[in-house]
Amino acid sequence: MVGKLFVYVIMPIVPIVLNKLKSNRYVKSENEDKADVMTKQDKIKILILDDEKQFTEELNESFLNSGFLSFEANTEIKAREILADHDIDLMILDVRLMGVNGLDILKEIKVQFPIMEVIVVSAHGDMDTVIKAMRLGAFDYLRKPFRHIDMQIAIERTQKYIQMQRKLKLLEERNSLISKTLEKKIERQFIGVSSKILKVFEQALTAANYPESNVLITGESGTGKENIARIIHYSSTRKDYLFCAVNSSAITETLLESEFFGHKKGSFTGAITDKMGFFEVCHRGTLFLDEIADMPFNLQAKILRATEEKVITRVGDTKPIHTDFRIVSATNHDIEESVVEKKFRLDLLHRLNTLHIHIPPLRERTDDIKPLLIHFVTDYSIRFNKPNIQIADEVYDLMTTYSFPGNVRELKNMAERAIILCKSNLLGVSDFPIKQPKATKKVPQDEMANLKLVEINMIRNALKICNYNQTAAAEMLDVSRNSLIRKMEKYNIALNKGE
Ligand SMILES: Nc1ncnc2c1ncn2[C@@H]1O[C@H](COP(=O)(O)OP(=O)(O)OP(=O)(O)O)[C@@H](O)[C@H]1O
Ligand SMILES: [Mg+2]
Image (cartoon, rainbow, N blue to C red):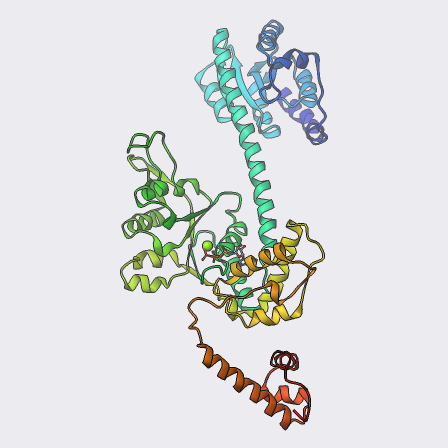
């Protein structure tokens, strides 16, 4: 009956306590002054609720002397007042208060203050009450009379638990803040307008919606495979956990297994502590396996098993560890050819490419060049403190004819170099010295001269036929008027009927 009354009266104080938490009001009492010896992080606030005055007084004094913030209450009304004014971390609760069932109070406390811990105390301790109290969420249980040391041990254990919970909460908040910042950063870093790249983006979002399925991303070097892998991770439900990027070709073969699976202390020379591997570290997150085609063949079977079973065993250990990861892998090689050459296991390829995203090279999506260049130039001009930089139209024309063997990364590097070296606010063609890809066969000088002559003659003939009307001549040659004018300037062809 009184327990119920406690429930009804305690309900209205919850919003007050929450408001206090929100407004961050900190009510400092005499007791809190005494406990200033401990750091604020370590201090836990204890409330003792027992109808035996002598008991609460003695316990309160011993807590204060030990440096805790402690409060005593002999009635539930007093307890309510204290709960309203202070964010109590731990309650010492007598389950047999006068006329009140302490278990009812415990039940309500765990509902109203779920993060508050409770140590239950009773002179009439029986196993039945202990079991009920623990089931209702009590952290510990002490039978009266107890020794001072028993209470001290119980408090220390609870304090450690509370501090761990606080740290965990702090880490979770920090983690969620970091992933939000990264999410925003990544959103800003996906640039593209071409239908081809928008299709890739759509596929990435679909992959994000299926966080259990593995994804294989293919594409030439620098097309943005890792960028897309991050978009998949940060748009999925795994975003608050790790995105772990691993390039297996960068790890020595002897260390590979221990890097992926972890190891037990002493399992090999140099294993001085227990260590988690990538599969464990990525629990609930995404494991990004870059350059998957370079994965040593003998490790592939183990990777396949781990991927299928989601259970791993550390090197030198026998204990199986369950871990929930998703693999996004990437390669710029023809992985099917690696399968034919017996360098890559077909069963692993099937396991990894449940979803397949191919990123086309930049030369096949020239519409993206302009927005990407503007993005990188803006980014570097801010970074290097060179404001109001403009890009001449000829630069875009030049870039659409270039093959970009290094794709977006090459364009990005070009922008960085141009910003560092530019002498004026207008970036022109000379600020972007474009090299032909190494693979391109060099045209011999005399053949080059012949080609030039053919081009000059074609332009002259077209102009003549079109009565020196540039628009008509450009149409005839199937080029833009601007491009014709640039060629005429380059070859010094005058608009002179007598020429
Ligand atoms: N669509 C895009 N928008 C903005 N930046 C991009 C885009 N695509 C790629 N980049 C940038 O280009 C650079 C290369 O991208 P990324 O590292 O993802 O390529 P990759 O395909 O993984 O290359 P590699 O095959 O060499 O590993 C990065 O700095 C990335 O931020
Ligand atoms: Mg990469």
